[in-house]
Length: 415
Image (cartoon, rainbow, N blue to C red):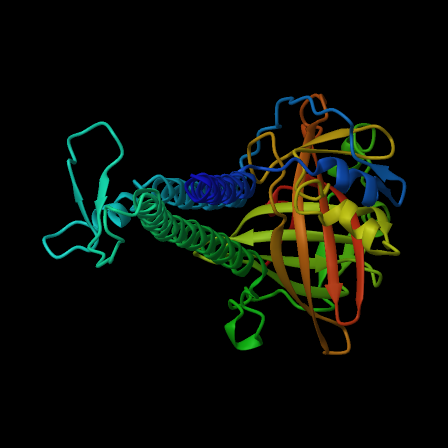
């Protein structure tokens, strides 16, 4: 009786231990798959401001100023296509994860005509009886203690068989959980790597891959410009009027650059040696300008450490790519290149700059375009733009904020 009692409780404890380990493993899997809100950690460790700029504590969506720019519409649609690809990938991953488990097959695999040990009375609601073939030489019935010993040995054999079956089943379940976790980690890393490749890979940085520059755009060229557009914009915007536009009416180009992003490209005509003012033009298939904007520098920030850079470029809360952007004077601009109320990754722009000494500079920009209504009457500009960019050039990096307005391409009188 003592042997039977000890054996029964030993295998009961082992069974409870196995199911406890299984339960802990399932909890770990749920915690891995569950989204974790770690914004408190990022908020406590990352910088909440940089260069006098701070992220608004609450976000209120207002209307994004409408523009007629083809490039703005193309960039917005490209971002929408990227979001759709990420959505499809997420749906596929969830569908794959919800595929019925193969764990029952571990139990069924014990079936068959040659299985050992064999189970009988499967239709019974009671626990299956295990039939074991043991050759035991028990004492004769004349020995009064023979029956208890035989019962104890049979109990030990029955408990061992149950333990062996439970161990095999538990091992199969653990392997299944581990395999599922490894598969999900692999899918997550592959999706992250693909997204990083799309966002970070250089686009057309080699000079031989750059689109052909329209004829007439060169360093040192002069542009006659009507100053009325800048005079009308002055009361409603923060742009700085080119000095030459109010004197001789001729603007001298100090540098010309080509900016590329996927299939789009622009030409920039810089008007100052410090590159604070420039025209940005887009040309159609016939090499005719169909879009022109003038930008002037509003502010420049040089983040001093990783925390300040996280304020600008953090994957979740970076202000470049945030749905709106507020400048130091309190003006609030809405994101142009993508709709939505959550942050998106900045647009990767590659710029190749030709300077007056015939040298070339290449730099990468992580940028986002914002805009606001000026509420000005025609012919004053109805929209003011804000271009925010984190720039990396050789071993230097900084953040620029340029404000801009639309300019009629014909006003530049390009030939």
